[in-house]
Image (cartoon, rainbow, N blue to C red; front, side, top):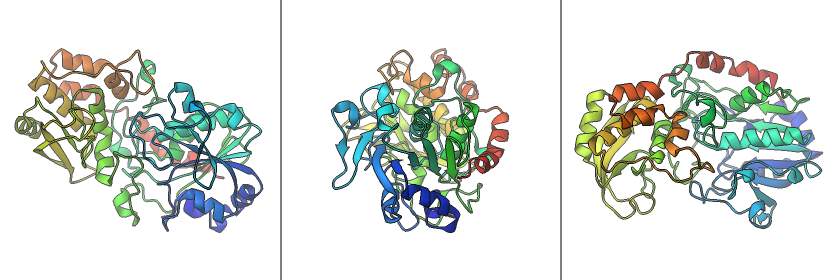
Length: 410
């Protein structure tokens, strides 16, 4: 299997290489975007003679040091951050919602081509795909061509794994800029071409957006079959197993339960000082969690929710990734936790991902319905049914993904 950056060094991308050498190039990437030899994309471009003039970075920054929702220094904080010895850096995750999209002054007249290579994890919550889409839209408005160096979906591209209803229109946000299932089985290139084409942007080398598609990817296989290391793309996404649970586990962010931040097992462990982990694990086992082993656990987060307190909860071990349904399992887990201690469980009401008028859990769910059902003490399976199933049309959209990439071939 060869990713987009791997293919840059092959004859397949010779025309793009020439273009990169003769154009002022802006690059949206981060340090975990590496080729099969472990070299960062930005270093590969230098080796190929690309004329890179500016580096754009997503949430967490170039080196992935910033925690979730932590502003990364850049233009909106008083001048470009400098990558030592290299390029000016423009952050696309600052302290305002406007910072999420490139400033027109950083595009028109400054670059001729925008190259994007970001490591994604196959969930609509993960913000990198939305950074890419916003950058592509801004580049198109400035008359700048964008090229995505695509990567496979680590959770697989199997249509039968799609899970989680698309958001209702009023619940889109930076954790889901466009309506799409939570676990969508698409690559970053497939997501952005879907919405770019819907927006009327022309695809291909002569249009607004081109894609260097992955070669030799078997869609029904996860990253465990790729024969290359999992380069963790953010501080709390340390392993492939974390990525497997994330499409469901991220829902915990909208509650006062700890999602394991501040531990070595973020998202795999969930709990709180007020929960009974033994009872929670037993209740979840009775409901069923195919493809996973769930066991009780006690842990102490070093930071984040319930920092320095002993929490009781559960740990989710994924045993069969293609069978496991993270949205269903974690929605049930949250509903059971609330049913166990309704007096202490709560949905957080602070600003979340630049949104202030809607609750974090509703933004993640894509609807207020699951939260309201829990507050009305609905049966757990009924709560899950509000969120986990997905319209079969999305399987058709996934099946058409490769033909869209063919239209976008760079």
